[in-house]
Image 1 (cartoon, one colour):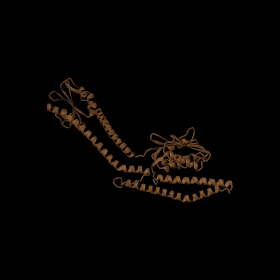
Image 2 (cartoon, one colour):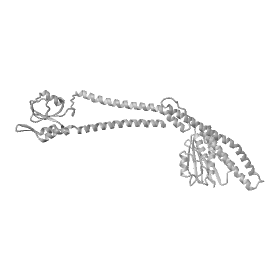
Image 3 (cartoon, rainbow, N blue to C red):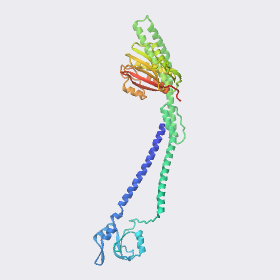
Image 4 (tube, rainbow, N blue to C red):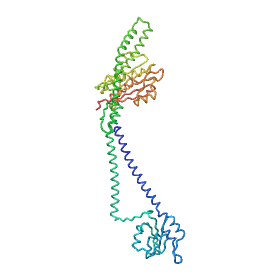
Length: 457
């Protein structure tokens, strides 16, 4: 799964979590409102039963005590007491427009509905009378509704079906919108990723993201021009330096071999020759790494023998004159056995030569260098190790994370790092291999390269 797909998968999951959170919050609020409503019901603040208990018959006269009067005053209510015939036998603040006698039909009506415009509450007393408490209009809402049980089941099932349908519809629309955004954004996100890896880029400048795509195309074109300019400049400088550098090397060699010159002059000519050879090597490395970085030189993979390439790399270093403080050894883990792999012989030879030169450059006091080749589990292994000073843990970590080491000095006595190892990693990457840097025991540096032994699809 590429980063673009991972991004939109996280987006979809976050959308589903938002929907679930939305449902939970709404259900919680609904129940809280229901509970709060039931707790704030007026029945808890005014009870007809309580009022009825404070209205008593004394000496043949119905009388309300101070508690009943206080309850009605606090709620702005009025009250009346009806006997079994529906006649008002006691009242308190009963509106003038209301009748003083009611039929059983009237009582059945206002007990479920309203008495004129007044919402009322009723309470049947043990003596057969009926206590009625009324409130000002628009203070209470009364609604009486009767449903058949089959219809109630249909209503509940239909409500659940409508809820689930709406939930499905919301999810479908959100996912559909996410898919549309993904289709629009995927080329742009993939283009950004290609741009970060230096791959060519051209996006369709149409649709909702036309401006963004056009901006990415302009950025890609600018980076391409910049890279081409840099590559052309490096090639031009390398070409211009080769001729004078060859002359310096030639004259320095002649002066170094001229027995008529004083020993000190010949020694100085030797220093000029060696430093010029280093400069030539750096220029060649810079040119090659630039060509690999900008795909100006592709690896020409053919069937090659890693043992033969390793032997050739060691021979070239020895033939060019190995200083006395160094010892270079070539080891075959399986003597007499060829190790074949698809590779570019020239690049692989340059890779091994750079690793050997790296050990020599960073250990001017001298060291032992071992180049070994092996085959294990379908992989070709090539190891270059030395018993020199090695690298710090910080530099090893950066190298193993694929970061480049800047070409700067760690101190006044240490040689430069960076370009040679960068070229080695580029060659390994061109062969679809891996490289690992580690410490040698008891000290030094070990570089192990693993390459596939067969052509990758």
